[in-house]
Length: 252
Length: 252
DNA sequence: GTGTTTATCGTCAGGCAGACGACTATGATC
DNA sequence: GATCATAGTCGTCTGCCTGACGATAAACAC
Image 1: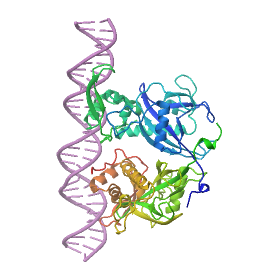
Image 2: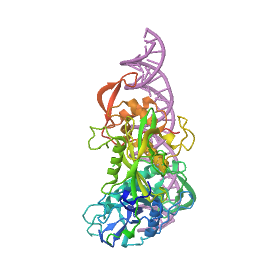
Image 3: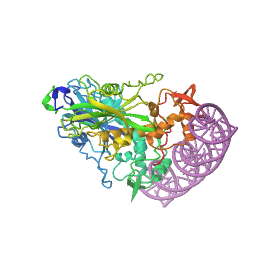
Image 4: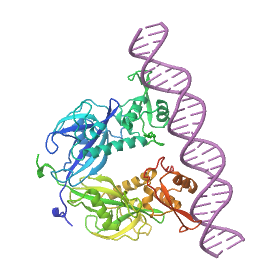
């Protein structure tokens, strides 16, 4: 059967981004303020239309670069690392999720080291890093006393799914290093786990676990005292991407 | 900005299904033979266009019912269980994945108990259960001596991703019970794990593990000798969906 | 009855995680 | 410069879980 436009309904396809980072011991997500209806003035996840000649991953990488300036980390070059991790999350296609038309959004999850202030791009009049718990709480008031409005569209669901993916994936992979600068200490990595999971971990057992897992961390030889206290060894992420046995998330 | 059709390129959106089951100690997937170009005569995954008023999950469930007659198991009714597990897998949107037009496919993964022969539906001139290793091998000859052609489109990649999802997910969830009839024995469940992972498991340790995990299995009181040997207790899947600690997949 | 098959219970050693003590090496404070 | 606070690093001990595997039980085939 040749191309028959009447055989299928037309869809718009977008990519939305859950960009996570750790700032001030809190898991934060990138939010942009909508400049146009619908949901004008409300916070939303960054995203945009997939172009005609673009792959989904390319579209997500392009949006990420536009919003944050981040380049996607190429895993085939483990030495140079100052890029974000990007992976497909899930696709959201409820017929009524966008009141204007039928939009299917392929959500992606990006993990980034702590960054300078975000730059607003495209149709967003503003952009900020916000703690995910603040973005996900329904109603009430944020830390600054400003009333909290839920995220636009179904973005609260998308964000919740992205956070859950990140929380579970750092259990069994080395993905937590994507939140760290290229060189980091064991303590800094531990604080990433603590921020993402929202728990406190025993520093001694954590140290034993991560340094005892072959291929997870590679010492660079340097040390730092940027966290205060005794100088700590600096590490890079090793080649191992899977953590076996996994890091155990404590019971709540 | 109001609805502006020129602001985005039009896409076709489809759902493709990776339907897995265990037959004769082998992990099998449902394949349909294509009756039209492109890839006419080649095997492909079942799937079809998402309708204008349909959610993605609805479209996947509809396609699954059309191809297999299976209804999707509703997890809110744990007692009645003779349905398939269905979950979204990933979305594939390479601009050239379909030579006719721009098609974005939201792949879904379905796990089903062993079924009678599949029924061909829609535009498929044939349908069959085939061992996944046979569908995934490149070139060569199948068990019946017939030359093996790769799956149409990017369906080999989709199938591989679905199989990998199933293999990893039965580690830490009770999903393996979706391959079993409503009542099953510990040995039957073990053979599911062995088929999906392609390994042999120690029957005694497996029995200890699954019966020792609270909420995983619920004895029905009955016994059966349908597998031969000493009568085995029958179980239903318990309410627990997460397996903690997980079932460990042996090293290869 | 004997052999075969499958199910189920038990035992034992090794590995790993949680709890936590002890020591080290810096900067900050008096 | 002594003291304190902070963070990092090394060890120890106990309990749980797993893998390996012996032993027994209850059916069927002959």
